[in-house]
Length: 390
Image 1 (spheres, rainbow, N blue to C red):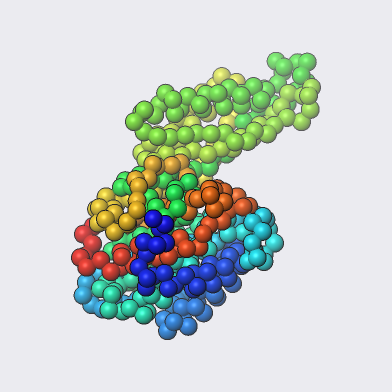
Image 2: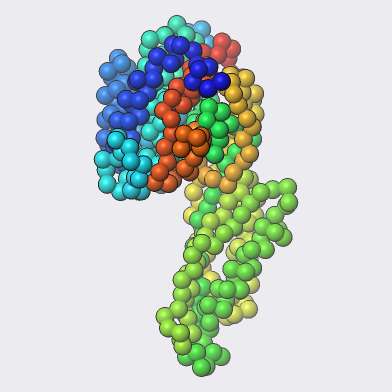
């Protein structure tokens, strides 16, 4: 049976609103911390429903909806707002109106699900036993809006007990909820390395310090960190993505710059890998009499779902499958550092409908009916008659 046909009739009735919201948001994609039109749209919509949303973290929005008093707890729900620097190639009649920007990661859909829930709860306050804190977060794609949102104090203000969020996943079958307890998405760091040698004539290599040779040995050595210093029971990767150096074919290069990414599901493993990079850098310096400068830029911690929260929400999800953890990163992870969290994938993949293009591509799209499926699970999470024991 089609996922849409399984939905309650009261939820199906929101389809016209889902189409309107998603398409209007899709037309106005904006970069992280520049979501001014998006913020204005959300504020206007929520105020039109009779709510009193507040701005937070510049372009973010928070909405606190008191429950009917049956359960004295607050559950937080998070959606992201920003878009990507891509030129859309979907051919849709509601394509991006902002040149070079596109909602290619589904955030327009994420926001739509949250706005639909807000409208539903306004119409059905009797079905809301607990308080709800809706978070519309800027800058998930970078530089990261979750950490500033945590530091804003909004969760302490409304005493949030736990937080739940979604991501549309084209690699999961349409209509299927996919998540897992424990590690789900990776911790990630960018690494920048400069190998500094001494320039000289290629005919006199002994009079210079060849940064290219030293860098080549270093890159080769880095590949051994995962294979020989990380337990086979732990997943990790270290990939060098760029290498730049040299000025001319007959000149000994005095500088080579490298950059790459390091990912794992454990902060302990991550710190150990970092230390090995520094240790190897010192070894390359001793071997080649060069200097190696290493700089890590830590991005997002790992997404680690609360097992207790998973166990309580999993039965509410309907069609579902356990998620196989991936090395993708998500700044939703910052919420998990301060409260129990559950991040869920909502499958939108359907090759027969042509919805098989990956995230972050210029052709990414999905059937908007799927947003009602996500909104319905949100509804069940809010309406759950027992307190969340986390």
